[in-house]
Amino acid sequence: MNDHGHGQAEILDLDAEVVAEHTASVIKWLPVSNPRQIVDLGSGTGAGTFALLAQFPEAHVTAVDASVDHLQSLWDRACEHGLTDHVRTVQADLDAQWPDVGTPDLVWASGSLHHLADPDRTLRQVHDVLAPGGVLAVVEMAGLPKFLPDDAPESHLEQHRHDERVPHRGADWGPKLAAAGLTVEGERTLTIHIGRSPAVERYAHAVLRRLLDPEALHRALRRDDLALRAERTVWAASK
Image 1 (tube, rainbow, N blue to C red):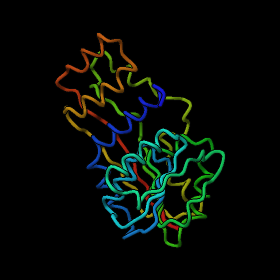
Image 2: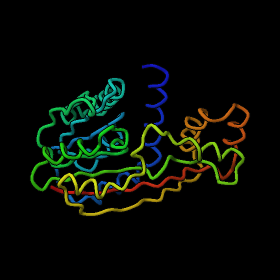
Image 3: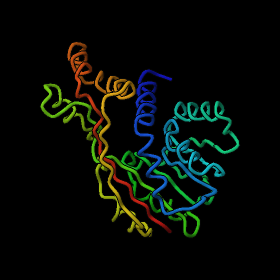
Image 4: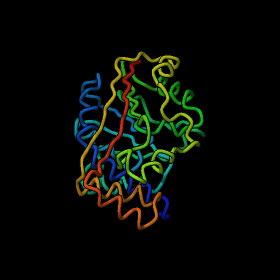
């Protein structure tokens, strides 16, 4: 894994660790009971895959991602936890091809759709493969996570690190889901504020070291008010 890939995997893993309780609450909220076939669309290193299996231990999850490195990390973790009978990995670039994922009861797309060049096409493809009554769950961040209070000298760097290459970040996915033929069953917004902890410190370090010089990073990480602040919106839509 190259340095960029390793850094991205580290951030995904740290985010999964810090917001694990929020993810579990979202999965419990979904209007689905005992799904047998699940697709984790844009699985990354497997935060959603393993959270879904924790809630639905009898299910089988197909993890789809463009990154071979992320899928290898996910598979290694499945091996460590004895879950290889419940996990399948599929490498695919969703902007180029739609993979064979069967007929899932639940499709989980967390933080992945905004990366796509044509997410509307992907939503139509999800609609077409979902089992009758199946559910698509879309989880998206309203913005990038922040760790510093607004009055911190370095906070402006956090506020201006939005990546213009992901124009669909922060979109209202409700109309897009409806346009794809899906029925929005529910929408909720989670405001996340998690105070300083060893995990939050590691997460902050992994993100802020890309933005701050070493001296400013050291100052930021010593702040008593260091915390993870984020907002995520969830849409649940059925076929």
